[in-house]
Amino acid sequence: MNLYNKKSITGIANSSLIKASGVYSLASLLNSAIPFLLLPILTHYLNPEEYGIISMFGLLQSIVGVFSGLSIYGAVQREYFHLNGNEYKEYVGNCIVILFLSTVLVTILIYLFSGFIEEISSIKKDLFWIIILISFYQFVILTLTSIYRAKMEAIKLAYFKLALQ
Image 1 (tube, one colour):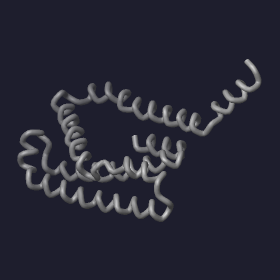
Image 2: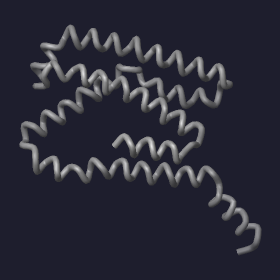
Image 3: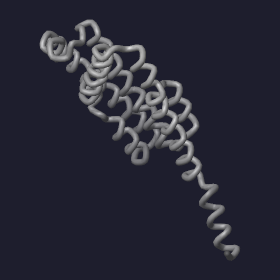
Image 4: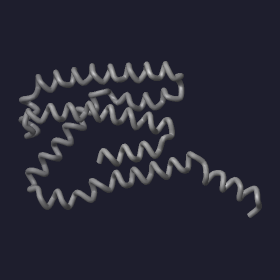
């Protein structure tokens, strides 16, 4: 291998993109391993009905999460590269306004259909408010992680994701 190839391989291996990719991959692996490792504990201590309620809670939270915030966090990450500092801050602020408005709309819909949702899901109405809060804050978390990813702040992103598990 000639000297030029060694330098280019070393340059690629030392690039911030490769380092950040390694940190992202390790954090994602650990983030995915935690629920997998908890599965035997949950199945040991919960009966099938309780485990079903937890699964239904997660499903409802996922459905509400789609409508709360409207998944704008992807646009927040994309616009980081297109807008300057003040414009970007204003854009993120507008996304937070959209989050509030969509969460209020989702809350109204859940309130109106709470009896039906409780009947088909076996989740008590009192837990719907927790689902709404989780969805709201999940949007905030996803927005923050999108910003960390766009800024190439892999270590902050990894700490943040692992701390939330």
